[in-house]
Amino acid sequence: MTSALMSMTGFAREAGQLPDGTAYAWELRSVNGRGLDLRLRLPGGLDALEPALREAAAKRLRRGNVQASLTLKAESRPALTPDPAALERALELALGLAQRLGAPPPRAEALLALPGVLRAESPEPEEAAEEAKRAALLAGFQRALEGLVAARRGEGARLRPVLEALLEEIAGLREAAAAEAAAQPAQQRARWLESLATLLDENARARIPEERLAQEVALLAARSDVREELDRLAAHLEAARALLAEGEGAGRKLDFLVQEFVREANTLCSKSASVALTRIGLDLKAAIERLREQAANVE
Image (cartoon, rainbow, N blue to C red):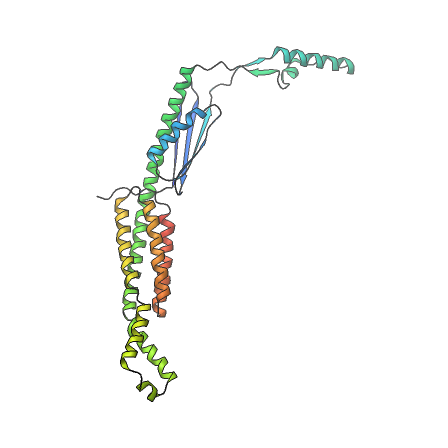
């Protein structure tokens, strides 16, 4: 049975309300990464929530760079009360300045607008209320995580046929390379004899033992033999298809396999003894590069 292939790209948003009426919203964004890197942006005073958030993310995600931000919006503003000491000092300075300038006394609203005269009155939070707040925020984060997982799974479903098509393209190029490589020994023998003919006259060529000619041709054929590379490519293709069928958690192994694809394609090109095989090798490398770019998004 084919399981879900997961991408590392996704977005989710979860909004709700805390017990005290404060509205909250979680936004989670993820892109591809070598491991799991969770970056949190939390309002002040919520640092104690971070370990639980990281633990929850690690249970649902394997890889990816994830940004999680939390915004809070209270229904009402905190009450403002005057600071008696600050108000008295401001009044004293304002009256003294007004007397020196012969100006009317300052208005009350002007004094209250001065920095530090009014302060927000924040009651000391109760531990039970704070615990309920953290529990509600953690539950909202977990729901946002589920949304992110669903988004990444949907992206993975769209990614699977792209990867499968690239593997089929690579398989087709491998078959073309195998067909071209089969003709290389005969082509090399003909080219070598042609080169020999331009260097030696007919009598000199006749004195070269046939066994020696066969040895030279066999040596050239061994140097350009790409059967091992083609066999390994076939094995890598089967392994990649099995990983796609496996689905979840296939990303790291797929990354490694793509590196092996690249290695075999490079060796094939370096051993090529014909323009046609070199052209196939270059097309193979281009297809593998496209596979690498897409595989980088798999969790």
